[in-house]
Image (tube, rainbow, N blue to C red; front, side, top):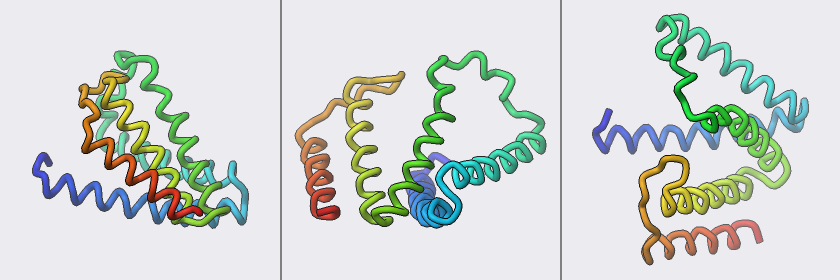
Length: 145
């Protein structure tokens, strides 16, 4: 799975899935509410991953205690992500909502890479990356104005 083409394809499929999930979450948020839509999203996902773990006989789940404590906040962060998608897409639309979400991702990812936060390999911010982030910020302004 280390071939660049396969990794790029997986990333593109993931991006499409995020857009679809955003639209679906927005519909659920409007019709049944934010907490209910987050519950359904996580509940269905939880059942599916539980079945996969049972099928694979637990995998490496028993080694969770060896993880840094802060990595376990990923579940909470997932709730924030799913709720913010549902709320923003249902109120300002998919394009504006995802533009803001993706811009925030790029900026925070640039900071994580630059400073090597949370165990990340340091990848310093250079002029090219700074220009890219600036274009993203300009894109946000053009999209939501």
